[in-house]
Amino acid sequence: MAGGDEHSGFEDQDAEIRQVDALNRLASVPAYSSGEAVRHATRKEADLLVVGHELARTESLGEALVLISRLADGELPLCGQAMFRTDREFLRCVCQIGLCDNEGEAFRLPLDGDHPAIQVIRTGRPVLLTSPQEYRERFPSAWALADRPGTEAWAFLPLVTYGRLTGVWLAVFDAPLPGIKDVGAFLMTVARLLGQSIERAYDGQADHALSQGLRSSMDRVGPGLPGLTVAARYVPTGGGLMVGGDWFDSIVLPSGRLGVVIGDVQGHDVQAAGLMSQLRTAIHAYAAEGHGPDAVLARASRFLASLGENRFATCIYLEADPASGTLRIARAGHPHPVLRLPDGTCLLKHVRGGLPLGLELGEDDYPVSVMTLRENEILMLCTDGLIESGGHDMYSGWLRVRGALEPGTAGDIDGLADRLMNAVVAPHPPQDGSGPSSFTEDDIALLLLRRDPAGSSVDPAGRSLRLTLEQDQAHGLADARIELRGLLHDWAYSEHVDTALLLASELLGNVLIHTEHSAVLRAHISGVEERRHLRIEVTDRSDEVPHRRAPGELSSSGRGLVLLDLLAHRWNVRPEPDGKTVWFELDENGSTGP
Image (tube, rainbow, N blue to C red; front, top):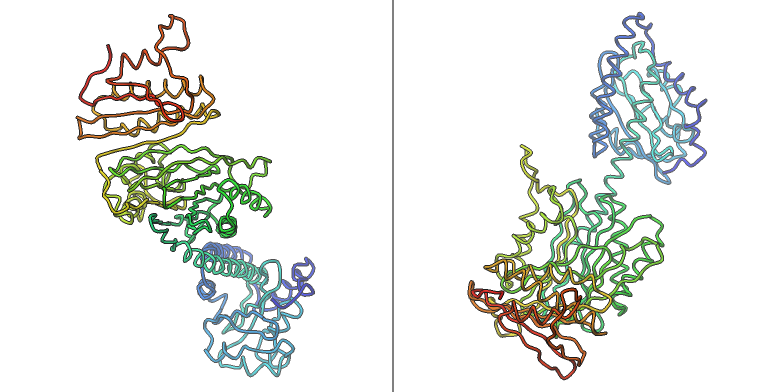
């Protein structure tokens, strides 16, 4: 605003004292007795406190002036108000109450004119006019704008916002002011509260404009590519912003693949939304340049750190090949994705990951995990708000998500997305405090990626799981057991599930211990419920074929084939052109054990 630093002397203590003294000249009636003055001051302070609290919640200038008008009474005969702001050339009335419409419109005066409000802008000091005669004598050229019957006094006070003189508040009185104790301090307090309300109103408008623009972009996601369909949903935080730090995006890459990203910038405020917008744009640009998932996240981490905002972000970025269904996934501190099989079974897919973006710890290694998305399988990516909203933790939230994602068919991917959001988001939290609420304390971003069937239908009764464990991923055995247990979540006999986990762990462990190659596990369930068959295969590239041994009581190895003999319904070793496969089968209606 106009006014410059030369007018910020309003903040100087001596100048403030002079303003208070000048305002006190408005009192034209002898002061109250001491007892009356105390009671009156207490009441006015209480009124001002109430109005101040309500000013803190106003969203417009008009609402602020209406609130201030509630202070009017016999001792403060306030009959009209106006608020002025300046641009480079003019003083403009931006809001008024209690004045004629033509009076408000008349305040479009050049800054080199002679008017009390312009003098406030020039000097940073209030202009106080205690009678029509004083107004007419001091500002003859401006008197015509204020001349109306019944107006007896005027106070033009500087408005300070963002630490600078940015406007003027006009208070108009229809009677001489009685002798209010500290009337000057009272009116200056009102002006300060009004200045703070202006800051919040303009900040709120800026935040709203930013949020509205970002939200419009969040409501759109690319349609995917032939063979891959994308559905996405976004719900902002319950805190009131239209958008926060969560985002998603889909990018058609130069290679013909589809890039998919979801992320969450720390915080739920407008600063988080601004950082999100920058980071989203940066990742889109890095991906469009053709960088792989690990390089995209490494560059994004350095970009976020370079902004100097001391905030981090979690993220998953993947490349999807529509022809083969191959996904190459890099993860930066983000929740793991979820795989929905064609029959509705949902598995939490554990993918390797690095640190969140922007931590500046000198570690920007984001390993790439590879998996294959089969026809009618859906990969769900989400931010933690989808899982943890309503007082849920990661476990109970995951059960809620799984319950909403399993029903329905893969063909209705938009219906799946809507059902997920309806299960998590409710208009209001429960009033009786019973159970966790579904109120969104955090943003929620959801993205579903489906591999479309290529003409032929997929058997909905079959389930398949495929994962790879590298030599440096011994800890991945636990993740493999979790995913395999999820595949068997409705198996009729729990002892079969334990048997399958034990035998699969033995086979995977043997590869990691006795070879120098990775282990590939494939699990498939076929058949009808209660008469299904489970087949698990573990393949490695070593030509060494395992042999049955008789391990001693204290032996730490050699038990795998013995366990297969005892517990599996069928098993064998199959040589491959490059390596071998050990497989076993379990029947749901069969018994295990010796």
